[in-house]
Image 1 (cartoon, rainbow, N blue to C red):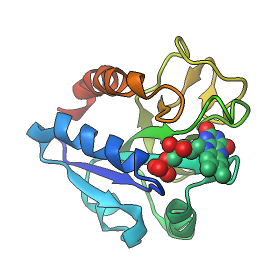
Image 2: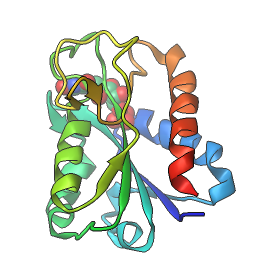
Image 3: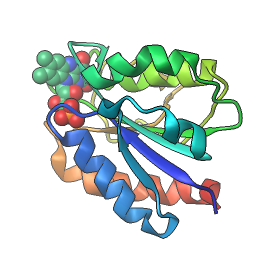
Length: 168
Ligand SMILES: Cc1cc2nc3c(=O)[nH]c(=O)nc-3n(C[C@H](O)[C@H](O)[C@H](O)COP(=O)(O)O)c2cc1C
């Protein structure tokens, strides 16, 4: 069984709530839950699988705490790490930058040597453009607690089931 860290940044608790739900669903793996606000790179270094949660703010930007942490992220070596990403956004008001921050994190973790798992089909999502949408798939799990909160629980459960084979 792999060791898992769930690391999130959240300004109005949407990403935090999703991170806590993911932690509950993965309770058998005893995951570490960390708020990137603390600025601590230790969980990145001490776990095999990193589940990273980020919301998009400022239109197309990383959530503030992830933004502050970004220079540290640029210095990490993530070779051999498995990363799964989830991103909170609002496809109704920001359809042209939907969950862009998840795409920003994807690009840097790939550059730092990580393998990314957990891509998601766009079926059921209504958006125009997303930096997190590559080669016909989202590179992680988009969640929208502003526009379609009722879908969050089912989306998380489906996604976790798909991740589980990579966590053994
Ligand atoms: C000023 C502002 C800018 C935003 N920009 C985007 C955006 O570009 N793309 C997007 O998908 N969501 C955008 N959002 C929506 C947030 O990402 C969304 O509310 C999210 O659930 C916040 O999560 P958090 O509470 O974990 O920070 C924006 C929200 C605000 C208030």
